[in-house]
Length: 128
Image (cartoon, rainbow, N blue to C red; front, side, top):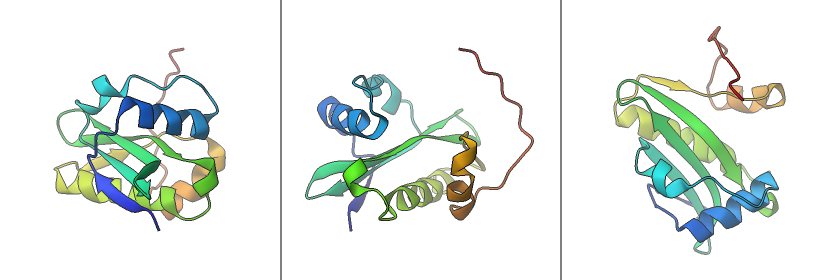
């Protein structure tokens, strides 16, 4: 079972490799700017290789946001994403967040419910 690490600050190369595999896209966001502003981020490591990742963004107050849980395709269906989201939830609570938000596509409803999320009537505007 992969080891979870809190705020590991993976290298750009590690994050790019995971992002490309997990999202089938060659270009990852610039995490060097993102992670320095995050409430937390959690990495899953197998044999010292980054195989899963989730970022917890926040508003500087009581609201935090789960962003882009990612697991390498070769490591999926082992509970890694669930462990990442649950650990992110624990750390966010520990660091003072009172609300943890997540936006997701309908096919992920069961996954997020299994992680303890409940539906709300929050508004959403797609900007791009």
